[in-house]
Length: 129
Figure 1 (cartoon, rainbow, N blue to C red):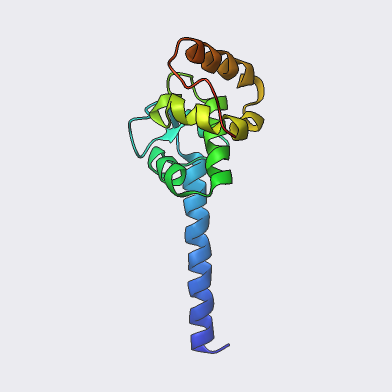
Figure 2: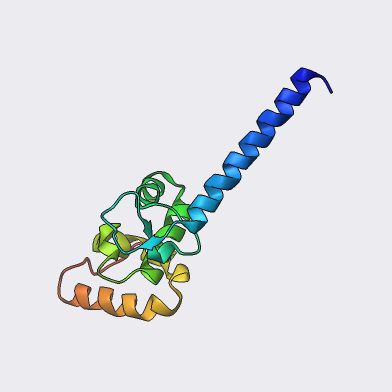
C-alpha cells in the first residue's frame, strides 16, 4: 500500500471512529426534563436521542411524514403540558388525521382533550385531513 492509500485509509478510519464516538455520546447523554435547554436530550426521546435544538430543527425542516412522526412521538411520550413547548393545539387539530396512527395508548386522551376544546370553542369544530 502506498503512503497516499494508507493515509486515505487512516482518514476514513478516523472519520468512522469520530462518527462512532458521536453516536455513543448521543446514546450515553443523560436524558433531561429541562426542555428549555437547547442542549438537553428530552426524556421522551429515550429511544432516539437528540437535543431539544435538533428536535426543533427537525420539526421545522423535516419532510411531512417525518414531522408527523416526531409530533406523534411527542404527543405519545411527553407529558401533556410539555407538548406545547413544541407545537400548538391548532396545529395538532389540523394534523390530527395524520397524527392518529402515531399516538398509541395516548390517542383517547388527545381525542378527549381536543373534543372538549372544540365544545368550548377553543378550537375549530371541523378538521380537514
